[in-house]
Length: 149
Image (cartoon, rainbow, N blue to C red; front, side, top):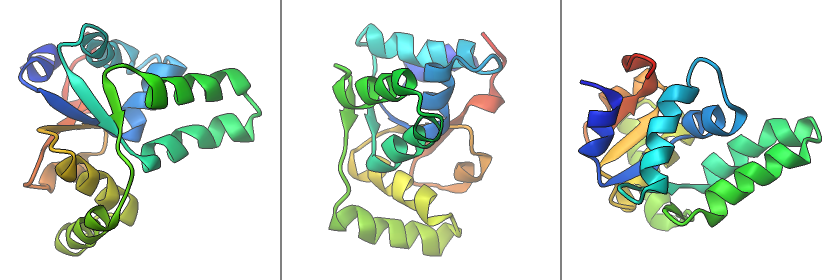
């Protein structure tokens, strides 16, 4: 199945950190695939959710490099996009994250991301982390599983 078909079957998508970085930084290996997702968001045929973890992870390199333009691009996309909802963490997410960490031996960061996606009622999780495919509670869409567009 093509990535566009997979995205077309999705109503609410959680955006893990890597696809957001690929899109903003224009990663040569992944930009065509990331564009499929972000074009669907721009066309309002898809809604998405991100988290404080996505925001923090995206900002590390621009802050280290003092790259204000890239930092602003991440902030604008994650916090001000019409069809991307920034979902804060709370005790419900923390409790679910502990369960996912215990049940799947995920990193705590990944467990928080999955918990946020579940609490935010996402039906799929966009990532490039194959370890998340073993989580049964949500469908993981792994960019590496698809051919470049």
